[in-house]
Structure formats: C-alpha cells, structure tokens
Length: 219
Length: 219
DNA sequence: AACAAAAATTTGGTATACCAAATGAGATAA
DNA sequence: TTATCTCATTTGGTATACCAAATTTTTGTT
Image (tube, rainbow over all chains, first blue to last red):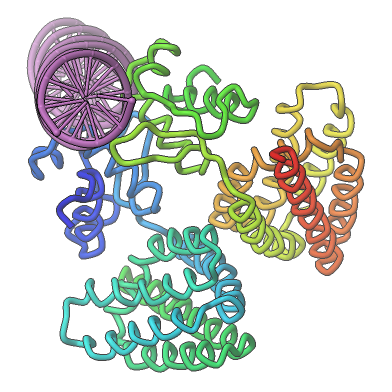
C-alpha cells in the first residue's frame, strides 16, 4: 500500500477528508497550505488535486484556489441518470459474460459485507459497497465500461454517503444487493436490470429527500 | 483562444500530432524532450500529458515514459459499446428536452458541415463531426451526461479518424447524420435511437474492417 | 468618514534544480 | 564467446524558486 504513488496517496487522504466533511463543500483547497500540512511539496499536491477534479470532488477555477465541489440537486440527479444507464448496461453484459468464478467472487464480497455491517467505519463500508458494484462492472469483461463505471461510482460516492448517513437505509440496501446477486447468479438479465433499476431509484429518492430537507433547514 | 491555459494549449498540440500520426502509437513521449521542443518547461508538459492520459490517448507507466496509446480491437469495440449506451440515452433525452432553438442550432451545424465537406482539413472536419454529436448531447439539458459523452467522443476520435481515412465513408456518414437530424427535428425518439444505432454500428464495422486488413498486412 | 488609489500579500502558474529508479553500455571473469 | 556485474546515463518524481494575476490592506485625499 505504501508503494503507491505519492499523488495518489495524497488524493486518497483528501478524498476521505472531503467525504467525512473535514473539508466542507465550497471550502478552498490552497495548494501551499495543504502541501505543508501533509508535509509534501506543491507538485504532487497539485497532481492530487487534479485527480480529485477529474473525479468531480473538487472544482478547478482558473487562477483561483480550487474548491470542494458543492453539487446541486440537478447535478446529482443528472449524474444518477448517467450512472443508471451505465449500470443497466453493466448488468446485462455481466449476466452474459461473467465467468462462474466472477460470480462466486462477487458473492463472497457480498457475504463479507454482510459480516462487516455495523462493525466497521462507515467510510470503509462504503468502500466495500463501491467495490461490489465495481466488481459487477468488471465481470462484463468490458474493461472500458468497467473503468467508466468506476469513475462514475467514485464521483457519486459523496452523494451516496451523505444520503445514507442522513437516513439509515442499510437494511434496504442489503436486501437490494441480495436481489441483484440472486439475479446475477442465475444470469437472469431481466431481473438483474430490474433490481439494479430499483436500487438506483432508491438512491435517487434518498438524495431527493436529503436535498428537500436541506431546503427546509434553511427556513 | 490564446488566453487558454498553457497545459491545454500543449495538450491540443500533442493531440493533433497523435491523431495525425506524427506521434505514432507505442512511441514514447519524454517529458523533457517534448517540453524543450515546444519551448515550455516540464511542469505544464506533465499536466498536458495527464490530460491526454485522461482522454485515453496516452498511457502512463509508473517510472517510465508515457507512450502513445495503441488500443487493440477489443478496446475500441468495448469503447464503442459504451459510447453506444451513452448516445442512445442522449438521443432519447434530447428528443424529450431539447429546445426548438437547440434543434435549429444543430441543424445549422449540419448545414455548415455539408458546406465544408471536402473543402477543409480532415482533422478540422472531424472536429465538426464531433461537435455535432456533442451538441446533441448538450441538448439533453443533462450537463453531466453531455460532459461524459464528450469525454468519450474525444477518446474515440483517433479510431474514427483512422477508420474514415482508410475507407472514405463520408457520403454514408452524411446520410446517417441527416437521418438522425430528421428524427431529432420531429422529436421521434424511436427513429432517433434507431438512426444513432445504425450510425454507431457502421462505425464498429469500419473499425473492424480496418483491424482485419491490418492483420492481413502483417502476413 | 468615505472613497480611491496604490502598495503589500496571497496564491496559482511556470521554470528549474535535485534525486532516485530504471535502463543501457562497457568491462571483466568464466 | 557469453554471461554478469558495475557504472554512467537517461528519465520520471519531487522540491523549490520565481513570476504574474488577483486579492486585500493601507494610505492619502476629499
């Protein structure tokens, strides 16, 4: 783990800080300050910031400090729309092209998640959740699709995290994951896509609730 | 135009060189050499290379020179698969959400392309082709989808360029664009998606031919 | 006191210097 | 002659220094 490239390590650290809210939306990320904080130079810090910008977690502004992204409801729901298109395609292709080994491995991942539920850090749990969905994408045997999907899941991470800590939907998520896995193991494209659709609709609803109550909070 | 950020300018220059074949697939892009060539320092050159890496045009290798990407047929066809998923969604949403103004503007773009055909640099013409498809994506009013789609179109640029210069399919492409535009102006989702599907299937066939004849060349 | 101009400071952009890993050439031993 | 070891060179990774645009603070004038 320690042999990972420095900019990636920095990006990991910043990413967690953003997701935990240590770095609040709208807050500036000054190259110099954060570089000295983490005891690295500006060069890898710059690269780390670009990585996060690519993921959509920070916003680059010409000749200004990058800031932590603060996506509107429209942006989130637009992103979920795209994620849905990608995941549905992933589901269909995964049923077709996954090896039996893939399915067994992903089943094991799900079992592991069930074990960990409530026992580990919420962010770590989200990491597992993400990996579950990414593993299905990889099982399509379409590397480009998997990569694109993974970039998107990362991008949505914060929104999903926020909607999840607001209202504990872990039981429902678990059930939906089981539905997806059931369809997957039977290579039932139709049920697989239906389950994925339900899963993402629920996400959209969760996010909608969160933004609605946030608007209330302002009154 | 000249006020664009330096790394972007460098990326533009390198991108064209890659597409024209001045920088051949597999060739190394040494930071230092290319930086001195373009009379800039390594820092913005590095960033430019990262931009192209994000677009999939160059490959980063840890502690090694980046090289110009040399995608296999599998990679290209995988990418077309994703592009198809995105464009079909774009087509459907564009029919639903485009303003009349959007449609008129895109129609004008197509007319302009018809005028330019054969009169301008092939790469410039491809730029127009790309902008046509990107404009449709923007007409969905889903900024995230448009952005994702645009990233993908850029990524496919070289493959499309190569398949097009190998076999002149401009007449067919023109006809297909007209079909798409016709369906779009009538907001006919079904025909729009069908036309887009045909357009991309043709692309896949073109690419397949190109790779097949390349394999022959080796014998 | 209020506004304007200018100087000082902050901060991202760029250039350069240094380092360490990787590569390749040349020498030496089997 | 071949294989291997060593050392020089190449090259990406990182740190630092410098610059210019933007921001803030200060100062001077009305």
